[in-house]
Length: 205
Length: 205
DNA sequence: CGCCTAAGTTAGTAATCAATTACTATCTTT
DNA sequence: AAAGATAGTAATTGATTACTAACTTAGGCG
Image 1 (cartoon, rainbow over the protein chains, first blue to last red):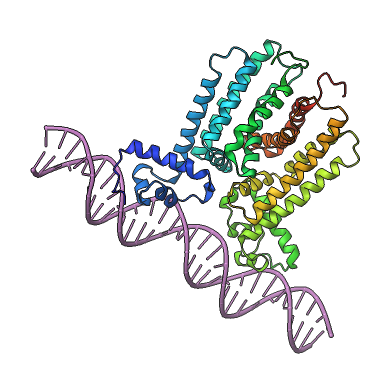
Image 2: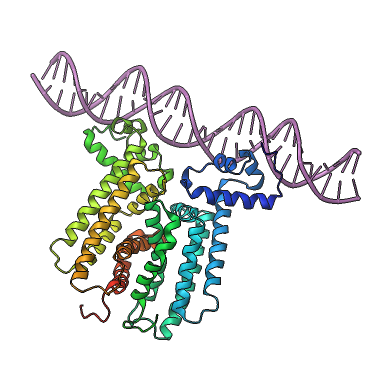
């Protein structure tokens, strides 16, 4: 058996978050106990409470981890792309790719969103969504100024449906129990979205 | 105190399901205990187990209740509408209206979908989704035959994104904590979807 | 090399929850 | 109206859970 592994606190916290996200890939967040998490990282249950004041703090850390990374990935993907619609597509694909790499993410975030009362974690999720949304709106307004969007388009609805588009893919993946396969279905889904917002008879691509 | 209320078994089961759906409107399904359900319907916790063999069976009954009604509503809405795209719109709005009337439904279904292992309830959800999807595909194929869809459209993706569109609305509603307001945002969302699938420069409405 | 602290273990505790049991009240039927 | 069936109560059980506390070990630094 592997001898007791001594890790510095911040690294242990990192491992904990990774374990949680990994476990959410094939287990229900609500039934995920501290014992499960500990066992999965080869440590006893009590050890977790050396690094987190309570279970809620573990969820919070996991959500923060996701929020940070998904925003970074999406921002990096759109970086340097002039055409706003192309930037949106890059964001979309980057987002989906991230989910494909971390299949536990949708279940984890959805699980947090189910809590009606605002917990620290759910507040983080909501904050993530808002930042995401405002970034989308920014790109959409840019696209409108360049005459790429069809007239009369409701930008607010368009931003919402961008996320809904991802969400639709996620939902199908959860039903099919194949979150990794989301990447393959992404291009067709974005194609649909683009036709929904773009000015008709457009010439691009 | 209200004297003990005697109800026939099937009616008590009906009330139980209604209580569950109602409670899911402002509580997390995972934290919904049999005690909560019983208290909400003015009955002791043990009474529930006169009518359901276990808690799982309660979830199953709730999902069956929803599946039956949502399919009936959606079918009724599309009934008699000749134009397939108009039928799709009617289905969309009927679906969203149903959710608006029963704000607990999204949380309940999402909660069931989170279970990775197929439970009886989650199998019902998946079955519901499949029937829904095949109905959508049927309408989409009809629309294609009538030349209403843009060439090259991936019908499978289009069916998926119809559901995704609803899901996107639901998600925004959960974030905004205003599930009832979903009805107001629905038309713009469907408009977006229609433009995504319809043949360009179309003349209709 | 020895000390001291951070990290981990073992063994609990109190609370909660689904489910059961023994009993009681109410409806139905003849 | 009596009797049997149905529906509900109150109390309890066993299992599970998050969290804690007392003890033990690892590892870096002077």
